[in-house]
Length: 219
Image (cartoon, rainbow, N blue to C red; front, top):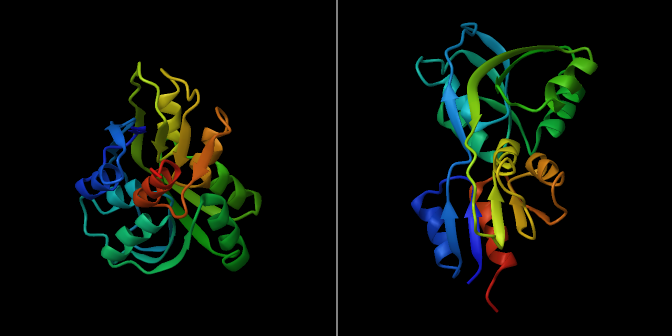
């Protein structure tokens, strides 16, 4: 039986996808998220969210449902949460670089508030600032690495963020494991350590699992 390690704890339906496919798996949280207290204007013309956690943190304590006019985001799950909070989502991109290029092309003269985490990558703000755009960043959550050493070697490892990869390699190596990543940004981080990287078709946990199931499908 092929063994899978998920670097994120899965919900019941996600676990079923693995179990019904005849795969054994272990799950743990490679990172820990802490929502931060922060200040934001009562009215925001354009907001950028590159993760679900930034959206969760933004709407956590206060009723901010009417504070944003236009939202721009990365990932289908991020979009879903924004829509559930009544937001107008102008653009959903597969990764931060794609979103930055869209904004530069279509909103060059607009100013943006970027709601991010403490370990966010540089691509989006760096690209926008290089284009001389007004981007103001607000840190909404903190990411902490939770390293754990595993004696077992895995046939496949599921990763859902660059931080998850960073956490895993603190105590382990990717050896000969197939690495399944939620998107191109996470895949780019994985490729620093291995060439055996498979990218999900969409930025959802289910899509990552589907890639692993297909790779290890029992014939």
